[in-house]
Amino acid sequence: MAAVALSATTPSHAGEVEVLHWWTSGGEARAAQALRDMITAQGDTWKDYAVAGGGGDNALTALKTRVVSGQPPTAAQIKGPQIQEWGAEGVLANIDAIATDGNWNAVLPPAIASIMKYQGHYVAAPINVHRVNWLWVNPAMLAQAGATVPTTMASFFEAADKLKAAGMLPLAHGGDPMQDATLFESVALGVGGVDFYRKAFIELDAATLSGPTMVAVFDAMQRIKGYIDKGSPGRDWNLGTVMVMNGKAAMQFMGDWAKGEFTAAGKVAGTDYLCVPAPGTAGAFTYNIDSLAMFTQSSPQARSSQAHLATAVMSPEFQTVFNLNKGSIPARIDVPLDRFDACAQQSSADLRAASSAQTLIPSFSHKMAMSPAVEGGIVDVVSRFMHSSLSPKAAAAQLAAAVKAS
Ligand code: BGC
Image 1 (cartoon, protein in one colour):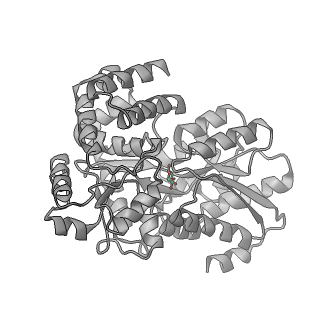
Image 2 (cartoon, protein in one colour; image 1 turned 90 degrees about the vertical axis):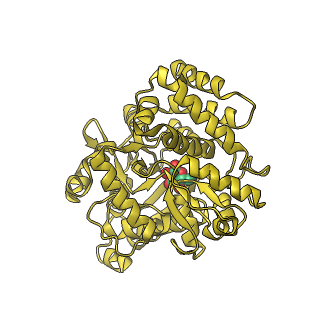
Image 3 (tube, helix red, strand yellow; image 1 turned 180 degrees about the vertical axis):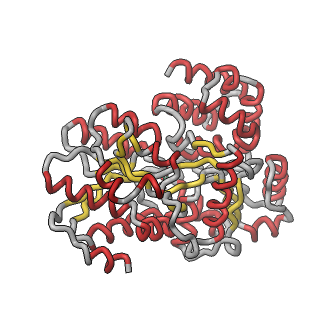
């Protein structure tokens, strides 16, 4: 339907659209295919620039090389504060005219619109809202171990101990910096709560970063190490999701791109697997918004193709199809959710509730809260902690030192 509707307005300046992204897992690739289909249905040519690596660090390194050599792609998956950094480099295109045509200010929550703007001008198009503070659960394994679905950190440890005692692997975790940071972020929120999270990761308050609550967060991480298997280092996040799906591990801390993997495998939320807020974080929502930042193009044809891309990304059809596959919910507020599953419905309701309760917070592990330099410093300490015998106290002290140094 969407393709038919769009081809009726096939543009006169068909050209190439090159998009840098890191959507390479099963669910992610299905979502990316939806964008590709829409672009080609419009008469443009799709040039895929996919760089594998969950969380996107590899992709962003590749992007820098391209931009420095004066050959930016049409658009790249860039998020949060990084949009400001690229804007300050003077390489992003002003797409205000497209945003005005599409009435973006009216259909986007102001908080999302402002992330997409550099100095008051739109330079990026938002795709979705991912929630990071989820726990993915294999209910059959929990039942077999006599464990209940955890809602607090204490009940998480109880369930994990029961699973372990029953000879099952409690947690699917891949030891790479993105996954270590994703786990740490949810545990920090579960142990310390929203105010602590804000003080530590938004205000970057030194006393909070090195204080007793942070030590308690690392204590919890220490305990969690005992629920992870030896095969963890280097395992991709999506293989962790497959372990939960196949009964090889009972739970996974991961954002709802994990749901894209369950969906791609034909699994049904609420039956085959459960999505529940990460333990102790039910009232809060850590958001991660995917967006495509538009790079300045020199030829009129390239600019025209870029305009088609930005318009397509913000179309209700695209925001529906992409996010059905991706596990996220649309960024636009006017897209009906009736085709979306129970996890997406819950995400949307929780997002609204968190927004009124002021417990809506940016995910730092997915590049929404702080500059890349500060984020890099924090993630290095978390990863070092996960892969060494660093004590919780020393890790908290190193966290404050890393933030100070960056
Ligand atoms: C991105 C998602 C992606 C995930 C895993 C996140 O940072 O926002 O779009 O699916 O990383 O690669």
